[in-house]
Image (cartoon, rainbow, N blue to C red; front, top):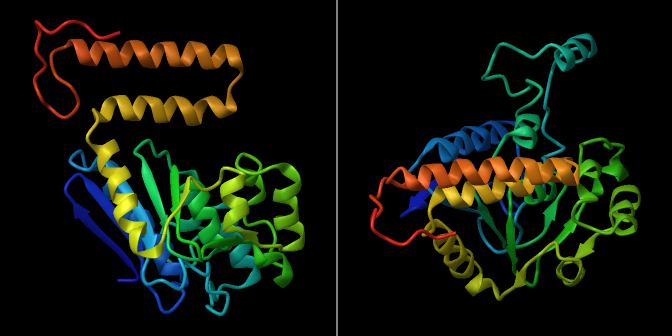
Length: 267
């Protein structure tokens, strides 16, 4: 399968596997969505790693030579406003849209083994909470050169890069070097290719060793607060904290390990 999904202890590993540059085809968006649903529902999996096969690229993005849809213009427009009931349809708009809007509060570490272009860059923004990259990695949004604007990158890029840099990528199609990505905080670490997966797994396993409910609360608060006012953020986090403490004090944590009722309370 072009998207490989495997479990290593409490960590799940997603791998794009499609040719030399791991091009993303329409069926791969659905595969990724299905695996993401499995990942989020599996209580034995506490963290994930997302990477690409080989050393040439994380992914070259969507395969623009692939016929995404053979529908007529009318059918395409209707489908945009009225979702298809055929959940297996590759032309259904759109599994990539579902991936962009999925609620995910389980952490994923990115192991960027090479360039991430177009939709692959968007996925690296939306599906990676911590990013480790090899020296040959870089980012790009070349769609504008082919008249393919509006894929949604601009709506999220401002959260991760200075506005002028983001607009240069979006409007000029200019690439972002891995050195600049690290300088701007888009990438956490740059490591040699042979150390990439070990380092990503080390981080994922460390996070996976923590109580999952605490990790979820931190993630949910972090991402939801981006769209809240300061007052709403404090109120929301207060509720999350009390719920998390209530779960802790019932005598079990989310992994099912009994807690010692005589242990001193931790604030």
